[in-house]
Image 1: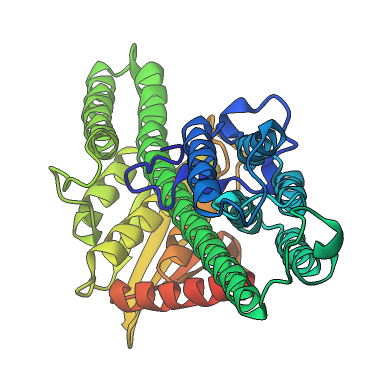
Image 2: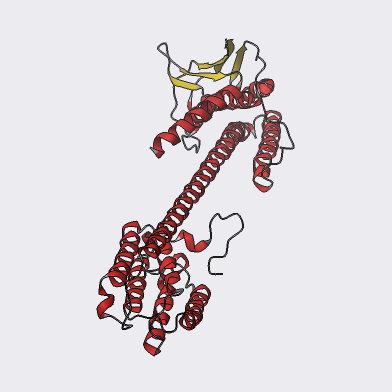
Length: 424
């Protein structure tokens, strides 16, 4: 068969090629394949079937001569181009069929070639051409059978009854209806494939952003601490070796922790869908952040106890606090910061304040910290407000849903409504 089905790929391949793809020069992989086998089978069936029909209608219709066989062959062979040029093929087969009938040759399976050409044209989207060709064929046949038969072979032929014309018209309508149904199904399959591809791209983009945020948060915080401790170690290496040793110990511990978290993030890429080997960090690790900040020379005061949170909110809250403290270490001259944790109904409130002026030190950063925090909050249905305080310093204020499952449900509803609007 020409249109072999691919596993899980929807309709056969030859249904998937409409007129919009014919003009893509040089893109051979997207062009329809030549339907050699089906064309050969249909042509052979038309020739053999017409031979048997000629024997059955001997004396009533003209005998098959070489010209008749050439017409039959051309009508069947034209189907070889039905997927690439459906409009010329459907009109060409209708024309050769009318010539065949006008010459008085016997009725037979010659109409099969026209039906296949009409089917291909409709499926490819050329509805007007297919309807016009079939209507022209039916009207031409009626004209030949009821008015022009007096001057056409075979001699002495009488007018055909109207009953067969009704049968022919019924078959024409049935063929057109089947073609329209096939076309509608093909368009539905194409829409479903496009929707699946769009959903897959969206999931890939979301996963890419999630991994980028994780890597940024882990590396930015750890490298900031390492950078500060490396500076301390270099400054005290000659005057205070013990303090320099402490700084190097902190660098070793921090780098080991960063490597572990990076391996955990990268592990999800190697084995997608598997559960992480280590639990995701949450606000229960806030004392570690305080200790790491203290090693970088920043005193952190924590006010409030973390409430019970869903895993997604707990991870986002930890990363937001981590990034906020990292920004204080990297970009502020403050030596003191405050973290306030509270809950208002179903919302977690996080506030991180520092009282120092900005230093402008980038430490090699990319400036994506605030953008990453906003993306994390938005992914859960929360918000982030960040900016200078009126009395000096900087403030990061985060509002996150305590139960992330409800927020995810609302986001899915909004996404589905947005997709419906785009379809309209």
